[in-house]
Length: 206
Length: 206
Length: 206
Image (cartoon, rainbow over all chains, first blue to last red; front, side, top):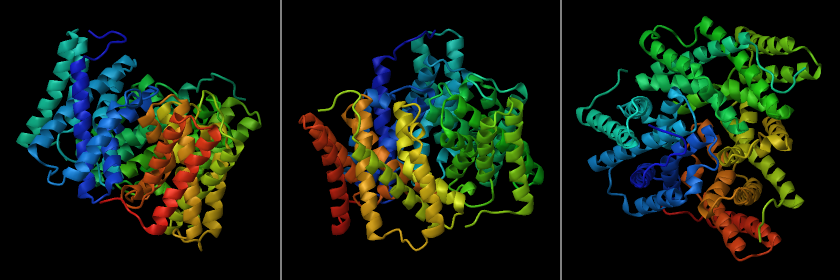
């Protein structure tokens, strides 16, 4: 059962930092693919990793945004961007381990987004919206910056995994499950749906 | 004459919901044209219908944004996106009734934007800016997401109708007209300019 | 040494207005290149000149944003857009005086962004991020609106000049230099790096 002013456990915080690094890596790899320079790699790393959370915080009026309160996030995104620029050229964007790591980031960001939205007093639809924005907003900004159509709009069950994760957050809270079950349940469900749909090549109707 | 903490009448609220549905429909239709999947249709519906208002509320610091206070807006946008995805394929984006409905949305969103900006204490230029952002921002975001140049930048008197509507809001308020005259005058002027320029094929110089 | 609630001197305020006009001019010229109409020129002028500062203020929760508190900025951007649309056709986007004026805008916007972020209590990384967002965010939005990849991502030491300017802000403040030295040092360093890299055709690795 969730009450006001609850803190996420340290384990989620660490996973959140891990997700930040993975998302930053995907941003920097896109910069390499597009033959951008070092600044482009760092900017895309920051935008992909922190853009969703920043849009969330600007929308719900959380000032200053989380990314400015704890600068670890910015430092991780910047370092990842620099490292990937110089040593990431052999990493292909579709490698299995990268997709698996990215799914972990998707799960944790969905949970953190839903958590923050719930603590901000939003209703059910608002919580789902903010959870999805947190988890997928950075990737959308990355696509916009390199003039692509965001892939959440057109392929794979990616945003849908975040949607179902956020919906299970609401369900578990409604069922008065313990905090631990809510937290790990949401992360597990989001990651599972993402990875199963990836392995089995499931798609939404189009 | 406008004073602090005034409420818009229920009739405007209903028209606002109508405009939300119409803007969501135009977003979902663009998704169909671009062959996006169901999630893409719902995302474009939400972004087109609520993106302008969300940017407005983030800018003027209205927390939480209107779209999260009354979840009817999100539910209407999502439902419209789903319905349009499954049954909207025969609707062409240039059908006359759709352009007329869209003009109604433009008029109401212009009024609501000007109203919110005025209540937030902005000056004349700020009120016009926020009114236009509310009315056209969602369409701009829709274009950005599908990698198009927003059509308000290049054709038709669309943003200009919103501009003149917002300017008449300032004029009517300055003239101390009654609230009813201000409200319906702005909506009527915006819709009229949009539809007349469409029928007569007026354009700005380019 | 910087303390709370300090005001920028009038000379910086005037340079800020100058930078606003120059950035608006570059936005309007891009609109001409893209054959947009008058509204497109004005919208691109506003977005280029004020978009970075608006994103900054939305992120750090400065309500209402500076652009709405002092409407001079909006009026300058709009006027510049209109003037450039009618009389700017002979100005090429790569003319030397325009690049030099633009560098002045970059320097002043970097300083103002770092200043506002510092007064908002952000840490070192946050100050650098916000300074760069203020100085380059408008240009990024301009690129997004006309479906280009923002040039800060791919060429020239532009964002890097802003980065080094913001870093020198932190250094000078740490060294307890006088306010005048901090202010003019940051502006001078940013402009110098930008113009030297332009004349000497320096680039980041890509």
